[in-house]
Structures are given as C-alpha cells and as structure tokens.
Image (cartoon, rainbow, N blue to C red; front, side):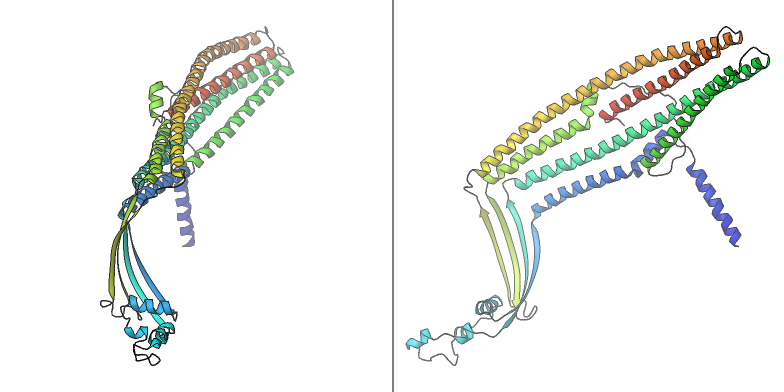
Amino acid sequence: MKKFLYLLVAIATLLSASTQAQPITLSEALDILSSKNLEIKAALFDESMAKKDVDAVWGKNFGKLTFTQDVANSNDAGNVFGFKLSSREATFGDFGFGAPNMPTNQNSPAYLTTPPSTLNYPDSREYYQSKLKYEVPLFTGFQLTNYEHIMKEVAKIKGLDKQKMINEKKYELKKTFYDVALVQKSAKELHKILDNINTLMNMTQAMIDEGYAKHVDLLEVKAKKANVQRLLIQMDSNEQLLYHYLSFLLNQNVTSIITPKNDLIPTTLSDKEIIDRNLDIQKAKNGLRVKKDMVGVSQSAFYPTIGAFAEVSTADNTFLGDADKHKAYSVGARLTWNLFSGNTDSANMQKARLEEMKTATQVELAKRGIALKISKIKTEILEYTAEIKSLEQELLLANTIYANYEGRYKEKLVSMSDVIIKQSQQIEKILKLQQIKNKRNERILALENLANKE
C-alpha cells in the first residue's frame, strides 16, 4: 500500500513538473503578471485605501451618532446635587427645608445663614446616565466639499500610480521576452559557427595527415572552438538569469517561453499620442486640481460654520432606573465665525494660491520634459535602425569573406590565422547586431511605456 502511495505521489510530482514546464507565450505572461505580480498587488491596495479615504470624507456630511454611558459615584456636593437634578429627583429638602438643624422660624436671621447639611455634606450617590447624541454639519464654508474633491483626485493619482506600476512591470516583462529571443538567436548563430569550426577541424586534421597543414593550425582551430563554446556557456547563463527574473515578475516558476516571432518591435506612436496618454502628465494635472481645491479649503476660514445637534438621555442612581420618567432631550445649533486671526487665514490662502501657480508651472514642465524624452528616444531608435541595416550588410560580407578564406585555406593561399581572424570578425558582427537589436527594442518599449500603451 505504501509503495502504491509513493507511486501516486511520484506521478503527481511528474505531472506537476510537466505542467510547469509548458512554455508560455507573451500574451499569457501578461495575463499572469496582472493577477500575480506582488508589486502590482501592493499598488492595488494603495488605490483601494485611497478610495476608502474618499468614503471617509464623504461620510462626514452625514454627521455622527454617539452613545455615551456614564457611571459614577461621588459625595461631592456639586456632583450629588447635579446627579439629582439630571435624574429629576432634586427636592426642597436638598436645600435644608425640614432638616433637623434648620431653624423653623423663617423670620429668624439664622434661617438664612444656617448651612443646609444635606446640601453641603450629602451622602455619596451613584449616578448612571445613558445619552444618545447626533451631530451634523450644516455648513462648513465649503471645506468638506473641497476635501471630498481632494480625496477623489488623490484616489485618481493612486489609480495612475497603479497603472504606472503595471506598465513598468509589463515593460520589464516584454523586454525580458525579447532579451530571451535575442539570446536564443545569437546562440543559434554561434552553433552554426561551431559547426563550421568542427568542419574546419576535420578538414585541418585531414590536411595534417596528408602533410599539407601544420599541427599549430589545428591548435588555432581548437582554441577558436573553445572560445565559441565559452560564449555559448555565457549565453546559456544569461538565459537562465532571464528565466529567474521572469519567475520573479510572474511570482511563479518559469522554465520555458515561446519567444516573439519578430526580434524587432515596430513603432507607430506620434508625439501627441504619447503626451496625451502619458501618466506622469495626467498625475501632474490631477495634482493641479488638488492645489485648486486646497485654495478652496483655505478660503473656508473666512466663512462661518454651522452645526446642529440633538440628544436624548436618561439618568438615575441605578442603571436605566425609571428611564422613561427621567428622560430628557436637547436640540440646538451653533454658528462659529472666526472674525480675526492676525492675518493668518489670509496668509494661508495666499500660500495656497502660490502653490497652485507653482503646480501649474510643474505641469507645463512635465509636458516639456516628456517631449524631450520622446525626441531623445526616437532619435536613438532611428540611430539603432540605421546601425542594424549597416550591420546586416557587414555580417553578410563577413560570412562571404569567411567562406572565401576557408576555401583559400584549402588551396594553401592563406594561413589558418587569417581564417580564424575572419571568423572572429564574423562572430563580432553577429553579437554586435543582436546587441543593437536589443537596444532598439528597449527604446521602443520605453516609448510605449511613456505612452501608457497596452
């Protein structure tokens, strides 16, 4: 039975491993990124918290309802008499009327000067008061309205931050996919060269056997083979590092992918489209709206504030004792108007307006900064595109020259060193071409990132 269970576990493990090993496409990876990337999840939490701040400010318009339960015991004369008044149980006896130590003749001077002991030295009394109070702001000088607008703009900014984070991770994911594609294509080209080197080794060995070549020629070929093998090992290590980074981005193990068919990304984005869609500019505009609302908040100091309240309560020397009989209510409103504050409110309002003007300048600066970035990136793309075309021609020439030198070596017209040099130039052109393609793709992805492009 145990062996059967072990077998089941082993089969499940193999099935799981085979499932994880299934290569994923870029489209699938983008879907996984949106749902599993931990940095994106954190940005989503930030956005949700900002939305709750909006709800919190909006809720203040409805006021607040509070319940208070007081429990006390005191023999302080003021407290005891206040407790009795609050519970509607005060009597004339509390003022000494009918007390043993009080004179009975009301015309006697002692009648007015004799202190009532029951009032000044009362027995301790317990006090229980239950109070329900509702307070609501009727007018706050538009302060709550402006704060609500501010929180909404802040929530939008957090939403833009979230989208920017998503775009950054998509940019990194796409770039990694294209990096893997370029590494694999470079390795493929190097494997072709390695095949050519093996052919050259066999040919050189045959020529040595026939006495037409020297042993040092074979050593040169073997050294070149070792060099190409070293490059292939480096590429394999780089590819593994890229897979580790993909696993980090997707928060799951990634061992193979389906690389994009085209190793050069097309681009058709106009400057206006990029500026209109750019998240940094949108954030700057939202920030400007926040500053405008902050001016409104500072202006609220010049308006009166009006609030209303209503409360019901009951009190007794026992908890909820005779609650209906001892109940009480209060309703009212309060107007508060700060008529003078030593010019502080005016200074705050002027500061808020200056901050609004500063932010407006920063919005314009953001537009110009993004326009500068666009120009720089597009210039680099054009430069890399031209360099790629040139390198493709140079590689074609290097391949032709190498094939020619290999044939000339057979006829003993050139040395093995000459052949190796031409092969080195061939490898150099291959690696340089893939490097420039990689740089061009990175710049195009950066342009799409600026444009908030899906």
